[in-house]
Amino acid sequence: MFALIAFVALSAPVSSWSGELTLHFHDAALEYDQQDKYRVTYKVTGRDGATLTADRKSLLLETRLGSTIIPPLKNQEPLITKAWLSPRGSLLDLDPFDGGVFQLDRLWNQWRPAGSDAWRVKLTTNGDHYAPKAEATFAKAGADYTFDYREVPAIGGMKATGHFTFDSRTGRPLKAIIEATKAPIPGGSEAATLTLTYEAKN
Image (cartoon, rainbow, N blue to C red; front, side, top):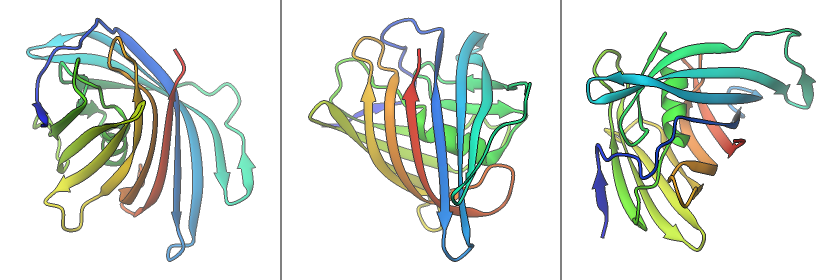
């Protein structure tokens, strides 16, 4: 039986989480094959009504175009974005807003509710910017959890499947491997097939 999660407090206090995020976009029709690796950190800074506010910090570690490796610029500064999160950690908004970044962070930034082996999450925004509504379903499979994601309406929207490993105490994501179709490429209007991996580093 699935537990429907909307606004449920974190099972243990978590003020920040960080990890390496790899986005591998590939599309033969578009002749597109690019892989970007980032260090992404969320740090809770306060509350805005019923939601949490946080700083999202992103630092590019490496880019691959086909088989060519492009190192990041020397002395680059991390990109810092303000984020709004539900009490369960689901992303609600970003400022400045990039639809691609928002939709892809919403894929991996998922939390396990305490004591649940199967649950469903309805994902939305706080209304300040547009992004498709979505629904994510989780089910225990050994030590991991299967993941099924659909944007609503499903026709023409991004779909994704994958596996998650969660921290047993806090419920935060430790590892995610996700395959998505029609995934938005950040900073543009194109979409492609995506292999997303996330691994916590703190």
